[in-house]
Every structure is written in C-alpha cells, then in structure tokens.
Amino acid sequence: EIVLTQSPALMAASPGEKVTITCSVSSSISSSNLHWYQQKSETSPKPWIYGTSNLASGVPVRFSGSGSGTSYSLTISSMEAEDAATYYCQQWSSYPRTFGGGTKLEIK
Amino acid sequence: QVQLQQPGAELVKPGAPVKLSCKASGYTFTSYWMNWVKQRPGRGLEWIGRIDPSDSETHYNQKFKDKATLTVDKSSSTAYIQLSSLTSEDSAVYYCAREGNRYFDYWGQGTTLTVSS
Image 1 (tube, chains in turn yellow, green):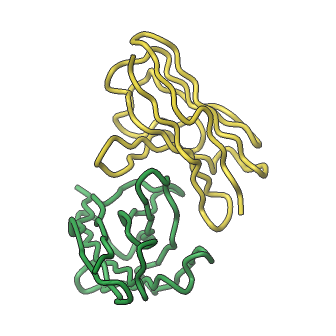
Image 2: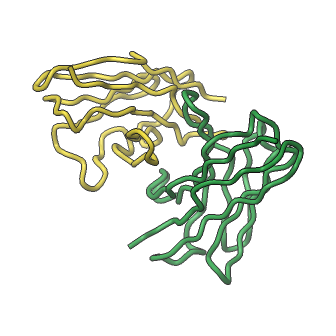
C-alpha cells in the first residue's frame, strides 16, 4: 500500500501570505496520479488539483501544484479567507487508492 | 449537471447490516466507475472500493473486503454499498464519488451512518 504523509497537519496563515503544503509518497508514482482535494466543514471533498498541477474547474489561479516521484506540494500564492479548509492529497497509482492524512489550513 | 444524491443519515443497531444508496443523474451512469469513501471524525479519508456500473466489475480495498459489498441498479442509476455486521467502528460518513479522468470528479453529499443500540 502506498502511504501518503502530509505536512504540516495543521497550520494558520495570514491574508496575503504564501502557503505550501507537502505530500510525501512512500513509493515513486507518476505525477499524473497525484491529486488534491479540498474539504470544508460538514461538506464533501471537492477535486482541487489533479495530475499534480492541473486546477479543477473553478479553482482560483492563486493555487498551484508541483512535484514528481515521491514529493509533491500544493501552494497558495496569496492566502485568502475562503481558502481555509482541509486539503488531502491522493494517489491513483495503485490499489488501494490512498489519501494523505490531511492538512487543516486556518486563517489568522 | 452531474448529481450524486445520498440520504443524509442512517441509524442502525450493532450487528445488523445496512445498505446505503447513491442515485446518479446528469450523466450516463454506465460510463463511469463509482467509488465509495469512508470518513470517520478526525480520521481522514479511506477508499473502500469501486464498481463499474456497466458490468458490475468491482475492486475492493482489502481492508473492507469482508465488510462492504458494492452493487448497482442500472435501471434506476443507483449505486449501493452494503455493510455487514455493523460495529461502532463503522460509524462514519460514507461518500460515493464518481471516477472521472483518473480522479474523483464528483462527490455525493455523504450519508452519516450511526451504529448504536
């Protein structure tokens, strides 16, 4: 089973601050198989970034994704209040599909 | 527009089974695999398995192999997950999620399952 480890687990950022969340993968995977989801309280996850760097429909351009092999990241160029949420990385490379433990991002 | 409709909540007694539903609309049901994901409070997301509605081929997370059974009803465009011998460990939110271009592109609102006597 491929294990995804996200860091940090919890963080807070001020409006306008740059934010980076990392996802470490236990076995190398193709970048096309790494995705990110956003989840806000009491709602279902939403696709956010797919294939490492492709923004899902409606995702603001201040978000970006990068990485390869075993190391991936999600970046927000300038934090906004609406970005406060939990972000999960997920791999599509092998069974079982697995998710990272999540990064809860709060606004300061 | 694509919609995956799930009941909001189910209350079931320990030891009993339950069958949760996910009614799809807005697309051709048989053209996309359907997945199920479990989320316990503060525990993140766990993939349970997937089913191809066109022929009912399934793939399961080994962890859920003896717990969950995935089925579909093509006539009503509905996917189901049956969970057996329920315990408190099964209390969670269960999401159905459509599989788009090798990622989960649409999610249901989730069913909160509570196992309690």
